[in-house]
Image (cartoon, rainbow, N blue to C red; front, side):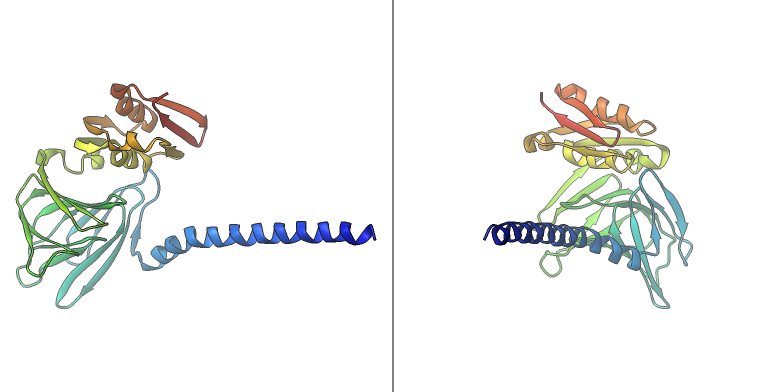
Length: 253
């Protein structure tokens, strides 16, 4: 009689361990599967703190920011690329017979010859035009709702509802990460932390959701991500706790 309850307890414990293992495996699959799919789709990829300059088949140059994936879809009559994740700065060779099209998660950008940046922010897509002219079409826009950008124009497209927001920056500040600097103008703190994150070998977390909405303007040196992070949050009186060599926690106390 006593052996049966004990055996039953062991069995339940074993089932609990198996269940937890299955849940962990499922969670890993959910997190890893998109990354694996992206690896198969990408023609070019960069890791944390890594940038790369690639020359496409038509001679156009693309500078990939850290943690960026790009797919090249060229054929005889079209020049198409897909930004799968991260950020890239495009310097496009002019070819009036073959417009250059960048497909990002929330928008399509069409150009003939120009230089511009496209970034997946995680909650939308940000396009910044350095020089030339581009036509931008949000995925959720009505037919014919195309936006034309001039140098210095910035357009943010929200992923959830397709809402667009236009602003301006100094064209010289666009994609300064190519030179190891980060220039931001009136951007959410959470977005800027995400940009520093791709230079950092550890995780940066902000448990207080309202902190991420704070607006930031400044110029930061990316050669030392921890110093850049400190310079970013110090004006707000925020604290950075180094929980481990691989974890930074930003909080108001």
